[in-house]
Amino acid sequence: MFEPSFGSAFGFPPVVHAIFFACLFWLFALSLGRRLVIIFRLRSDDFTELESNLIAMVIGTGFLQLVPYLLGSIHALTANTVRLACLLLMLLLLPETVRVFIRAGQWLRTALKTAVPTALKIWSIIFSAVLAIFLVHALSFGSFGDDDGYHLSAPTRWLHENTLSYLPTYTNTNASMGFEMLYAIALSFNEPVAAKLLHYSSGLWTLLSIGLCARRLGDPTAGIIAISALLISNPVVNLSFIFPLAYVDFPSCWAAMLSVLGWLVWRRHPSQQLLSIVALCAGIAVSFKLTAAPLIIAWICTIALELRSRRVPWLETLRQLSGFSAIAAAPVCLWLLRNFVVTGNPLYPMLADFIKTRDWSAGQAEIFSRYMHYYAWGVASGAQLGELARKTSVILTTLLVAGIAGLLASRTRDTTSRILILFATIFTVVSAFLTGLYFRYWLFGIICFTLVGAIMLCRLVQEAGHRLATAIALISIALVVQVDRERREPQRLVTDLNIATGVLTSERAHAGDPVWRFWVRVRELTPPNAKILVSAFYTTFGASSFGCFPIDRQCYTTDSHLQRFIRLDTWPAFLESVRGAGIQYVIISNQQFTANRQGFTFTEGINEYPFCARLVEEYAEVIAADEHLLLYRLRTLDPS
Image 1: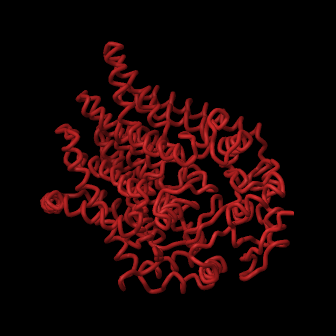
Image 2: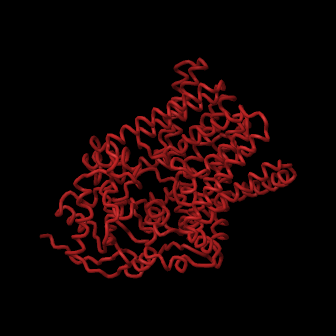
Image 3: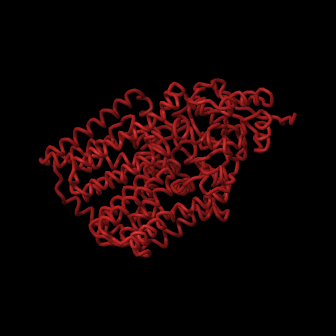
């Protein structure tokens, strides 16, 4: 049976085996992408070698999601079959891999002979220090699995069940799960830490893509300034939080930034081939994260405007836009098809009023929509910030974005920068309309605005030394801010460093953590096929969609704002849904620390914790406890 490991493997610490696996994975993706570029006739001499390889890598990464996807579609998704499929592909790609190694060696010899300015060396050292702190945290796991509840737990569950099964209380798993398929590959090789490194390294590719776009816009130093500014942690952009986690934000941003790179080349050398690359990168971005869908809308609007400004006939414009849309939609359609198969609604959970949707209703759709639009962000304010104030905040912030965009556009005469500002504005405004002020979903738009701002700054500061000094000042601020954050929790950095280097195992390092100890007890006291109800964790810890990754069991959450499989409208319906799901165990806290976490009141939210508490009081016996966390074994539920 598949069982993930959190620490050392084959006697090597995570800093060795996880990085080694991640390097092999990206080499594999690059080799596959280079072959696919040739097969689909996407090769273009208009790109530099580095640009071509980075685009090939994202294309290879996008296509690798098909390995677990197709195996899952025939109920053959196991660790062994994934490993076998990958190893066969690696053998087929061996000649291409050898060519990559040869060319990499040539590039390295040339790079070592290249003179690097002293200021750039200083910047690189500080930049590396910032990334090193992120890396230490990426090489270990926190108490809640570091995967936002489902990015690792979903592929883990699918590897157990040999298919992309329906996970009824994890709404987000019925969306684009492309990068989670790559996590499934890492997990198949028993490398959960390396899965986190895939996201970390996608962040590196995102930063590299920003630099390449800046070079195409005329000033490589602007890319360094933009990267430095983005690494300064703040309430809007907090890359220090995202980098060490097993999320999917960076893979989506990486593919999206490469679509921008392709567009910059297409503007100078218009061709259907280059436009196809833009569309494919955009589609891969959305296949990694469905909330990136505004990217395709923004590209269609931007490209239509450009084609018309070049006086391309309407018929030809429509033909090119149709081809663009078809290519961009192709990677996403795989997931829309899967959604249709498991829920009956390809756009789950949207349009539930018109499409019969499994375990969903119009009422639940309204709750979910309210939460996503107005309450998924600003959670610290909770109910203190009313819905009218939240709606007003969304409108005012959207107007502010448009105002900043207009100001930037008025300050530059460069047509490319102006179009990029328009593109970023469309993406951000549509994102705000769909998800409110959830700034993590705006990340790509923020990157584009930062890049344009850096380009404009570099045009104002003519002296190259002054521009590099600006970059050094910004990256120094980023380091100081990060060091200050680490100073507040010094033990966390020390603990993660000990785990990363193999000095301590995860179990020994977290021996004093009651949550970690509790997960160990759950694994010890429940069989591998146990079905566990995780009760009101959002209003207890603020952990929405708590997943089963730390305990490696099939879990069902009661998140009243995200699911309807576990009914919370009435007590009999709740009891019947628990019985129907075959729940055997219940995890609950004896305290509800954030009772108003959702920020608004509705029947299911009011009932969630009381129903779970009544369930264990009347129908269960406690078998484990650690501080406020309790594990109950359910007895037979009485239908009366």
